[in-house]
Image (cartoon, rainbow, N blue to C red; front, side, top):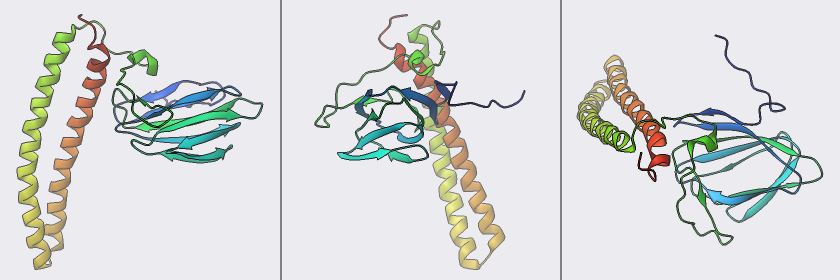
Length: 212
């Protein structure tokens, strides 16, 4: 199956949504304003493709046009308004993408109450049939797996770090590389489990207000 090619002139929607990243093309009309918010865990990148807009990030403003990019870091309140007489189209990505993803902010920058949007708000279909109680049980079990994995990884990291120190002291590059590879394997396995947890959380969290 060939990889997908997206076009900002036709694919105005979420393109890729995983716990690691959400990316999309977004169109806003002249005069339209996106309300101020921030992201508890994610950095957001904005690349303007058409039109012009004014970004406000942490109290500072700048006008951007096609080919220009800006970034709102974790916890930085930001908003955008379209200027000029043509629609604005941008590419944006938020990484990671973990519900509730957006935290509303007052004009003064104060945090508003947490709101969990449905998965459909991100053009994603998740499990709507499994009872929430079962999803919650799976979540706890996965978190227990994460805890055990992290404990074992911590033991392996300590051992590999000691081997690395000994190798460096002895000038043994081969042993140092092997120790680093061992440490990386632990990092790799832990992050894989974290991403799996993120996927389960993004399925469970939007449904917690329902009883089935």
